[in-house]
Image 1: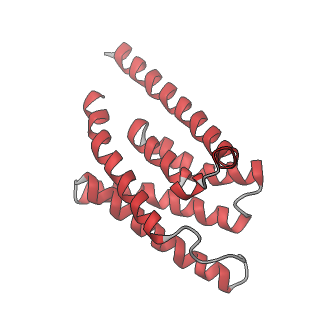
Image 2 (image 1 turned 60 degrees about the horizontal axis):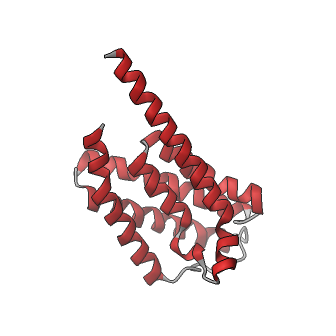
Length: 172
């Protein structure tokens, strides 16, 4: 039994490590990818995409670590997003993870749990961003990614989690 636990821990740790390296590499390469294919890849919310992958393929702790560190990593590597927005993004992504697990405990339904957690974390993000703009901490548009794209990505991410989260949990 102990050997099985150690083997599961090692597999989980390796999969978390590989996903983290992949997520940070992807975040690092988003500007280059966007430039190479002449498409604004940032519109698909690459950090949330990596967060959804972490929720499905690793664990809560790893997802929280990524949620908190991806914006900081991006800021340190490319100075984008700017510091106040980095803080907002870390709060938004971390809240997304925490709300997802809270809703899963309460309503026990995957799709509504992830979709509502995404929407509520976005609402808080925009409230805080509006405040930061009004206090002159940020000099940007309130909504830079069109709302319809945000709705589509939220539905796609929620669907991905819905279809693959249970499969991962059944294998464990």
